Length: 248
Image 1 (cartoon, rainbow, N blue to C red):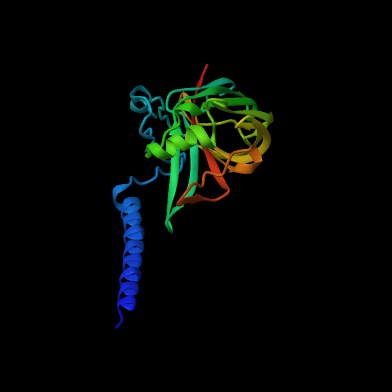
Image 2: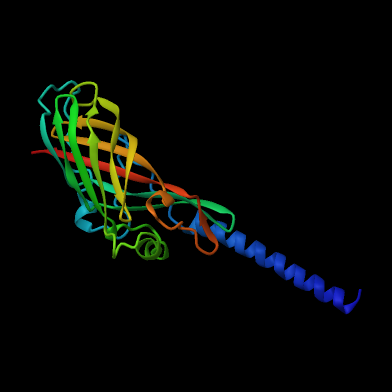
């Protein structure tokens, strides 16, 4: 075997070894050393732990305002319901890093707003999310979210305002889950679009919990694709919302 062939084999072997190291290291990083992504919000979920970076005051009281009373409670739900402690919002986006798939999840507990309920009709609703406090399990991802992607220095909040009443089908009663459709104006990155999405709600004593997943196409809102370097994403993601509403 000639010297040139030997050198070529060594170089080729080194490239293969490097590729194996990169892919294997990425797999280990994602599946062993990285934390599992938070599960999607649901009415049945009992794990509402705030992500890293969320204030201790918010995370320690997450979900603590809910009380449970026997199903069928017929106490009036009419009036204004205010978003309270335990509420969260954020994003869920699929990522691919060197061929390895994972899910990026970022959340914040800084959510405000209110709903107006009259019988089985939600006549008004709005909420605002402080995007400057959204965090995930990765500092580098958070830096990209705050600067290049969402530019929260210029666009610090995301808002939603209901433009069409929601018919729940019946007045909320304790323990009964209802599913309905919501339509309203969503503002992200300084752009407002009308969106329609499914909401699920359940009344438990003095609170109503509402969860929803709103599909977002980045380009529709002028949001740069999060892909950067070896990390790539799809052209869309999900805006996740879990609201705890208190009457009054």
